Image (cartoon, rainbow, N blue to C red):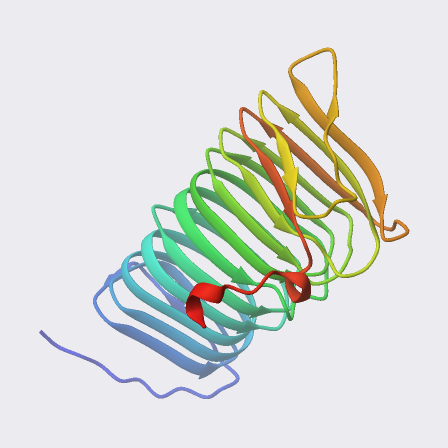
Length: 244
């Protein structure tokens, strides 16, 4: 087994044909990796990164923008100043420090996203199977999910639409005012907030339309064969006395 280290000027773009084995790329102007299998680390890239990865550990940190195709990747993505486009299959990924916009298509993948740094909308997600956990979301978003376990914590009110078929929608509400528009077909709507009550209808639907804390941007939730659970803002969550 051989290994190579190549030093190049930082102003250069790096393009790599399909490769198997450990790969490290750092301190260049941009990178395009046509296909990479195995442990991979990409960091300190001044420009765009386009990467196809399959199998093994993947770390991406401090890049300008990113287009990533991941197959069975165990990935951590941190510090992307601009846009991210992600296509994931059978992957386990954690994303944080994303400037946005963020666009995701996934199949049978588990994603954890800290959206605290995402200031440029929109956030768009289309997925089938797996899990999606999003914290600190504060920008416009559209989520279309089928059989995806969904959990969202909103840091601020923003126009957000979530469609889910086959799995529950759990949302921690934003601390400010917002307008709730929720419909659960063949399901139910629950909430810790006494201002949110489900309205019976003639069909198999539970429905809520209400201005919460004076109203604001629309939080639109649609669930089919699933439940909608809207929780109090994070600062108002009841304490877990079992941990005291």
